[in-house]
Length: 113
Image (cartoon, rainbow, N blue to C red):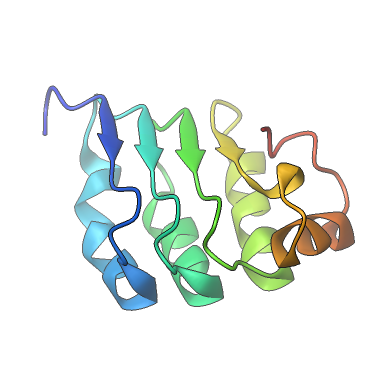
């Protein structure tokens, strides 16, 4: 994946178990944008991603529509706070469980929409 800079896996029903299969993406030197929107990742998938993608060269990670609660949001916020280039898109623009979780965690400034 030496030349892969953008990867859109939106709406593929990857699920929490499938998130672990993305481990190699952290090694893709050129990957800057990863879209995992609407993949039923849940908290387990968010926790997996937070550990697999640290460190990475990602700049944008899209995760709307994955039913991630406060637990997953917190893990992703930690990931984005340790990597200043990374912007996680989704939580603050939704009117459902993800928005409540981001609000409960607090600062949405690093999780951009």
